[in-house]
Image (cartoon, rainbow, N blue to C red; front, side, top):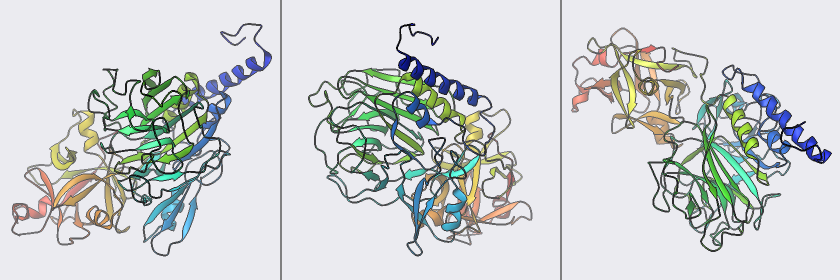
Amino acid sequence: MFPGLPRSCPRRLRSAALSVLAVFATIAALVVGVGAPQAAAASPLPCDVYAAAGTPCVAAHSLVRALYASYSGSLYQVKRASDGATANIGLLSAGGYADAAAQDSFCSRTTCIITEIYDQSPRHNNLTVEGAGGAGAADVGAPADALPVTVGGHQVYGLEISAGMGYRDNSTSGVAVNGQAEGMYMVTSGTHVNNRCCFDYGNAETNNKDTGNGHMDAINFGTECWFSPCYGQGPWVQADLENGLFQSDAGYSENTSDTGTGPLPFVTALLKNNGQNHFALKYGNAQSGGLTTTYSGGEPTTSGYSPMHQEGAIVLGTGGDNSNGSIGSFFEGVMTSGIPTDAADNAVQSNIVSVGYGGATGSTGTLNPGSEISLRATTSCCTGDYVRHQDNAAVLSPVTSGSSSLDKNDATWIVRRGLADSSCVSFESRNYPGDFLRHYDYRLHRQPMDGTSRFRADATFCPHTGKSGTGTSFASYNYPTRYLRHYDYNVYIASDGGSNDFDSGTSWSADVSWAVSSPWAP
């Protein structure tokens, strides 16, 4: 007998409960052995879980994997700059992971943007590049290669939103309207956020304008504190219910322990709303552990929110009126019909954790794309020092086996094909997905890839035999006489002699020669 159900419980209800229990049991079994890469994501997947719980997905968007065990269609469409041709990027296998190699091949020697994100649910609520709205001009598509990431042991791409980018569907099927209940989650990142409006995923107006209180019901993730006080530095999971980002029925945070997720590389953000008198907010580390509820209570006390007046459009990356000054990362997300149970949410979180977001690439210590490395100085003064990021800048610091995990992660880089030239390399931060080493005013910084040709060139370095006769030297792609150099414990692109202190000829050959080492981060 299912625990908690009386013997008099109707057979249909007992059957549904047992079905849900079976789904959860399957997921619990799958979570064992999380670290092992798999050829395909294991069944059941998030939308299978929600369907079994009686709250089916009415939207299921992902650039990285299937969200149904049986799904075998396309995930998204890319358009290349060279000739305007488009291609659909699908899966390696049904229920599996994105075929990123197909994107790499199609976009080789040119650049691509993402033009459409396909809905895996039977509702076909596909997202296309958003048009102009009440608060923003028409958006542009996000660069297809801006956010490489390892998921389930596969190198795939997420969606990295910069200001002026966004996606939308104003003509949907099955999405909640006029006070109907719904739930939604997205996997995002706490390392690529800002305090501008509004990095949202969820229910929005159908005319790209602000039509009043309660006409939105979307997850917001960022550091914008709409109603003071907010505690900590964020970023926070909030509810964009239109004309406010809500952390409670009062708007401001009533939960002093909710200081935000901090710079977690992968975050599960979740919102549930019965459309009448209750909504809830949750978050979790998408790499480990469960969900934390930060608010569960009444709708906002201001008029217009109880009941809600959702219009049923779907927005990603902007506010309901196309307020598009925000930045953010998106890997996967779903919307449901009805409010999922907490047990279903927990099972979905377990599945998200099980796929291994940001896991090891499987290659270390080389300059082959996908290899994880650390860059060690070879100058006699500094052979225990490595390139790391600190306060968004590249510096040279000692790292040892006794160093903190933060220091080790900051000193670990993933080699990617050169963003401006695939015969060269770019260096992605291990713990800030989508952030790359790039030079600005000759100094090296860690910054998010925005898709511009300037960024691509600034973040591309071409390997040569070490100028000192050992190791490897890295020439700047767009300043080929300048090489990656450490000077006074900062990192620059430097020439051999020049007007800048960091161009000094003293020990230049040694300072621009690097040992490509095994990564410090596990």
